[in-house]
Length: 79
Image (cartoon, rainbow, N blue to C red; front, side, top):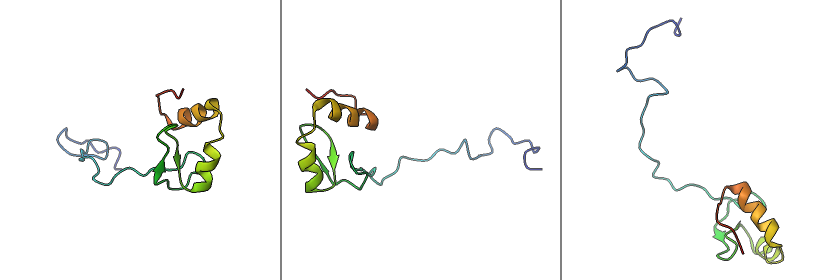
């Protein structure tokens, strides 16, 4: 019944509602474990949640680091 009702162009629908951007900052998650990550390595740009993850990141080859960054969608290459 609701699908057959004709809506005017001015009547808001779920798809036409405009909302301002969220004031809450985006959540950041660890690239290794998926846990909430308050830290980021400035050299590799990987996010991490604990000192153990950071220690394991220090021994990763650059192609593995680039793989994690590609999965996240980060575009800058690590050298």
